[in-house]
Length: 444
Image 1 (cartoon, one colour):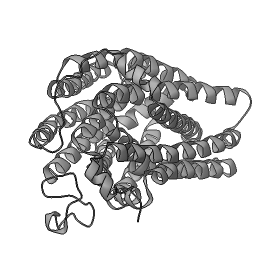
Image 2 (image 1 turned 135 degrees about the vertical axis):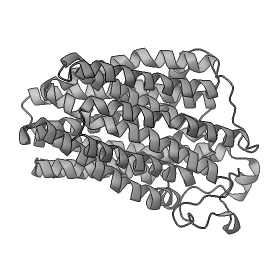
Image 3 (image 1 turned 135 degrees about the horizontal axis):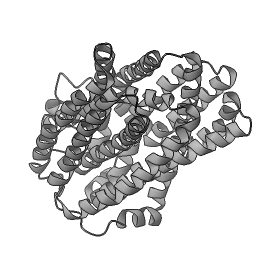
């Protein structure tokens, strides 16, 4: 594997228009994309069911589900951090996925007893929210460990596109089978697809281990479970990432509650609501694939990571402006599709690129803490803030007015993080590259 951009002779002709990948990098790219495809396909089979369970329990009670998810994260993260200090990557990551596959099987048995069980529905909502963040965080930690900083800039967009293809297949499968099967019967299908990530991990691990230039290690991380939290508190860079995620999550939670409020008032039938949620997912992920394949890497390389990270916040600010004027079903659906597609295609890969310039233990311990506890903690706080704003008499338009300046601050933070990441990448580059002039991700 080589970390420099491939020359014309080393490029893969069939892929060169979409992604700048060398022949030696192709096995890593394909296995990572297949891994992410299976992961998100499994999740998106289950997501419409989760969203409907949340609405069924009452939009006015959803802040309790978000709070329960946060406390579940507080229990899960120390366990993962402890395991990361003791086990090699080749054992740790498959074990995490094996645990979640077993959980899906247990929920299948529980929900088959009675789909209307309130506590089963609530537990599934919380569990799937934890599952989503945990397995995706572990996935990206793995990738930032096996791909170099320069490879990440070129390849992460295409890898993310593999995940988005899975995110298209997932709701499509749900849409076809939901009319023929009870919702609980979708869980074994999701479990089988999630199990397909395991051979993809094995191929990616072997590709990484054969690379003499990357220099990754498969040793346990060592240390204590508090090192990740300590590293976050001592690093302005990591605190900046925390602030970026906090602002993102706050606004995403506001939009989630607005979506649930509008849909619950506009549509009475449970099946129709599930169908609307699945349609939004399908449109979002279809748009995302095209952006990831043809724009993500080019936007980062030509305009810089800072500008790429500031684009989605500006788009969200415009979306809230639309909701101020027209808080209806079409408006929230359009805003959610564009916001989520922009997040998956630009903001999410961009956030993962931020971690390619931090030490290895921060990629697993600190990153996992940020992606789970900070993320879901922000979710929980935002859910109560939203409830408080509605308690003060603010409607959707009023809350949208409050959200617009927050989105603009988020854009500034994203831009500054991109600049900081480039400075770190230059500082850690080999002396020969610094003398030659490390590219900063913008057109020279």
